[in-house]
Image (cartoon, rainbow, N blue to C red; front, side, top):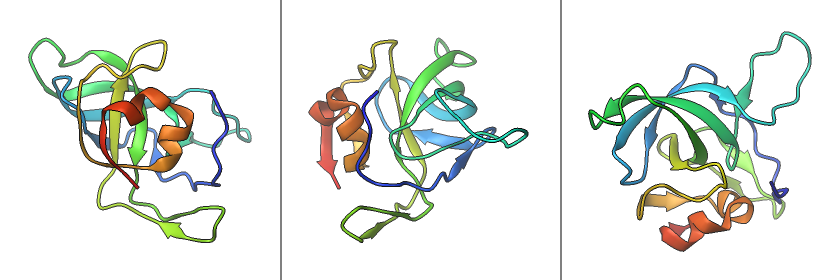
Length: 132
């Protein structure tokens, strides 16, 4: 995983329910864990823009429901700061399902995608309609 240019504040906690922004068949995801998360002892893990998370599918197609999947956070409500000094926040929390190699499962993404997520996972930028 590559480093990102901004210091995104972690706005998505474990056990949060977030939306799925692609057409993979999942609609709602429940965050189970955050991959490659380093913190102090007894602190509950949280994710930010561009982080790889482990989720379970809460709503969606019958075949996808109750599956444990990997996803990348592409939008978060919590405001974060870019290196240029600009502050960014989105209307909702959303993620895109990916496979083990970091390639998206779906073929299109609904809504805007943060630039930081595209920096880390370039394959997401190829199917994104709008990058902010």
